[in-house]
Image (cartoon, rainbow, N blue to C red; front, side, top):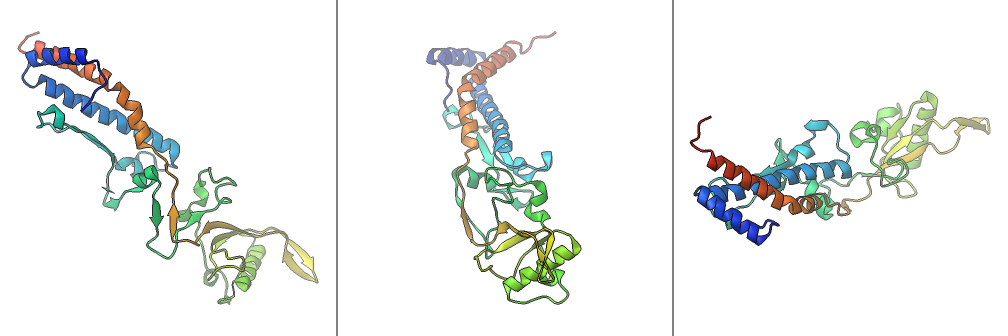
Length: 264
């Protein structure tokens, strides 16, 4: 346990606290560590809100998974006192490890055949942007050809797209579509099909311009993440304030000890 406080001041505080009460100094150190953990957790949550897309307000499971533990009450040895800040491994019965993965930039591996990766188009043309709420995976309501066509084409991806796009232009409704397999350009995932208008060629209506945009790619099973430290910057910001926390807790403890037994 280390506090950034002058050695002479620390020694003087220790003497005063030891004189004031048997456990006054350990109690002050414990309170200081707990204060440091609490303030770090607040700063950590602030960083999370800035770095990640957080929805649901106070009920968000990622924010609620951030936890701090007070220094142990029964521990009287100052050198053994510790407090903790981080993400719980489980919250509300669900595994929560997203923040650790983001902090260190680990590689995530899908338990299924692929990882759904939001494309540049989904993010509004810039990978640094967040995915808009309307384009979240949970809201895409993606459909396969069996869901939208009365006589669905099987196996032929090109024919499936022609059939799906024809339905879009006939109904003038946007459809999020998943083909049976990769396209001829080796793309696979959820495509947004929009009515781009029609032109008449050879007496038949044809789509005017591109009707399909890839929203989520299903190509890979793994995804390396860039490190996005949020806990370390929080700890680095709070650590220099620990001396002030200790002084505050020491003065509070001395005042409490000095007024014991006094009647108002």
